[in-house]
Length: 445
Ligand code: NDP
Ligand code: 2IT
Image 1 (cartoon, protein in one colour):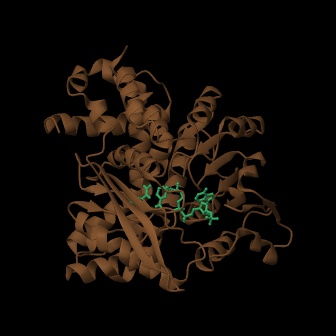
Image 2 (spheres, protein in one colour; image 1 turned 60 degrees about the vertical axis):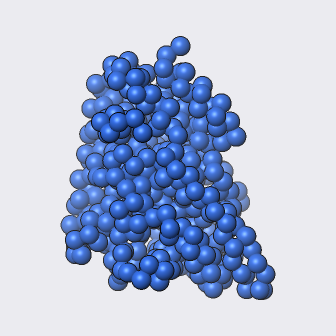
Image 3 (cartoon, protein in one colour; image 1 turned 135 degrees about the vertical axis):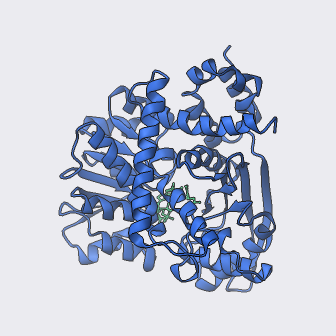
């Protein structure tokens, strides 16, 4: 048996109760056979066994008092997965589905994504099973303060730098940083990214994941001689990533006809009014069905899973993991989809990915296509270290350059290991090699 297969068997046996983590590992390892064959030093260093075992996992109690005066207990997580190329870096997810397997899959993906940006950031992830939905502002503050009271002892601008993810946006980052600053008694704002502009956030960071996704998809299509302008797009989700991807898609001349939240999806043949969705979901915190109040010709369908039955040229899953399975992938292909851009982390199952690749669909894999968010977080860290602010244009130009260079590196890595134009394999290989080389050069840890 090859070293890749042997290591995978060991990792599966050790993490049997974490299916999402195993899925993420299998997806990466699938691309690595020819790399391991060419690099015996990786086998000698047991690099696959090491890379799939987090350097450190922290699980903690988060007690907080709700508005009725009742004590609530949530579970907090931070996984410092790999620090070989920089301080641990990755978001915090607050969602009731969070458990160790979700944080591990996200942290594992983050290692390679961060390496692909070319910036000095290691892989980490954290979060809680806390559900922000329906909570009052005071409850959110009390939860964030309690969460940070414990987390603060494990993070710092040069050790581990969190940011947002599902359920954690600028509001939560503000409360988390406020508590960190109060405990430390110092203005170390490089400790967290996605901050408000007035206290050290970077311009373009809120938009970066969605914009970066569109820069990547545009580059992928352009490289293959296909125009993005004029294409019909379906986007799942209506949070940070989805709304900024939709905004940039319209700017680039494409038409977004459908978006969703966890309750259902809207279809608007005139093109979705992105400002309206963004206000509804991210400011008023309402359900997406309310879109119909001001857009009476649009349609709402209950249930978020049906969105992929809408015919489109480009599908952008920007909500959560395992959104597109084999069945939905078949439906999309049947309806003529040309390209899929993964804005969320692991939104396609491994069977769906294989199917899209077999059918010649251009597939922009998450760890490359959504890397613009964390890349701009690293740019925020640079500005904080310099105690300077860069202009909107400067950050946006850097972001665009990073997305184009990730595409180029993925193309080259895939070609040099015999995969042809396969960005899934290319992103896995390019990200993996940077981290593996750093690990080998640093000894046996
Ligand atoms: P948000 O919390 O802003 O938005 C999440 C969106 O997905 C909401 O519209 C939510 O609906 C919807 N959703 C539908 N089903 C689910 C489900 N089962 N679980 C959770 N959400 C669901 O998150 P982001 O936009 O920040 O993140 C979206 C995806 O992008 C995630 O996979 C995240 O890991 C990834 N990502 C985020 C980055 C960032 O910078 N924020 C960077 C790179 C990747 P509802 O409102 O009904 O809950
Ligand atoms: O999945 C991701 O890359 C993020 N949630 C962003 C992480 C970050 O540190 O900006």
